[in-house]
Length: 246
Length: 306
Image (cartoon, rainbow over all chains, first blue to last red; front, side):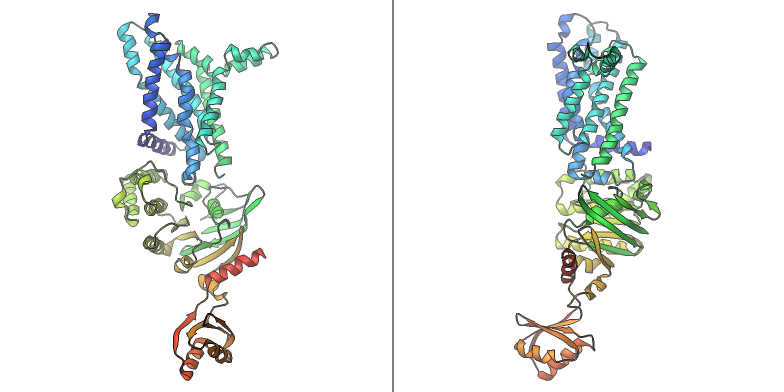
């Protein structure tokens, strides 16, 4: 794995984002929606507490639709237009291409997340929040976005149709989000041994995100996101190897 | 040297490329000739390391495309079929990306991009978004991308497809200029291109290598090779008179055109000219036939089907 190759791919992707409306539409929608959720659904003012819990609470649900929208084109588009043949006959490996694309998308989502800083300023003007908790929640949110992106990128390699890639990604991300909720766990409770039940619950983005966003960056939560991202990037490499020429 | 060794590729039940082997030395322009769906593109995809062979392998200057793929790809410039490009980038952004991916840095990067864009006359469109370009320009961007790192091996899948006659001429000229010290493999279904460009031609159909020869060698397989065709006022009389020549094997009469086939003894063209002079025929057209590639192509690809 050569970092210079990863960087080359990453840079091309980022240039591509900003050369099309994709980047601007995504950023604007993300900012507007996250603000709307915070103030209307989250009851930001009514709570009377100076924190960003109502802001972060809706991130998983926003990401559920927005992240697959970023990820769906990553490989499906390359395959549809045949550029995958150009890309993968350059002297770089599939792993470098997969990682470069992932990092570009992840940085891009990170940028959108950073642009929510007025929210942070607002809460600091209004009161005296625990900025450590807020910073941790930002990290958690970004990690969760990374997990969903890795899923979306891998599933985007499965098909050359972006709509199919999008729907598959939303479904799988939804599964990963919900696996910690009672609604899913109740299905397994009673007949599944506790160890496996904990396993299912532990697969959940929500559980780990919530744990980080309470302000505790636990190594286990970091490991979890690293493993999820690593697993899906690896899956991506394998899928691409098998499907690139179809 | 570029070598294919028993290259085979299967797509499910379909045998797309069936046990193709060959070797090419620098200074060769090799033309893959074949009907659509013959396996030309699939062969190229394997040579460039995009597609892994079901069996067999290929080697690019000693680098195996299966286990040493990145090193092999470094030596190759490739224009995939249809010249796919990143439409949202400008030509300049795109070529710089290719330079980066090829590991070309610093002054070299600026120089190579400038050189490739000058060779393909892209100067005027460097800052334009690729998707807004005409088909001809897109194809030239694809070619610029392939020659950017001055590779010893160029693999060009239908490089002149969709270009107008002037642009075709330009691309052929470019290929000729690069030919002396490179291995260039092109695929085409335009027969004249083989004659105009290639020093070696392979006919591929249904995944099999059916002929591997020089264009002249292929022409020599034609029934029309060294034949003489003439247009005269009284073709029947001409046919019977010419048929008696020792140099003629056979005479064919079609739409007032007489074609005389050589027997292999003596020089048929001279003999025919002599008769014309003796008989004082008013000849409207007299044509020496080097051979007809389309006929060779049809014969070879059909024989196989039969």
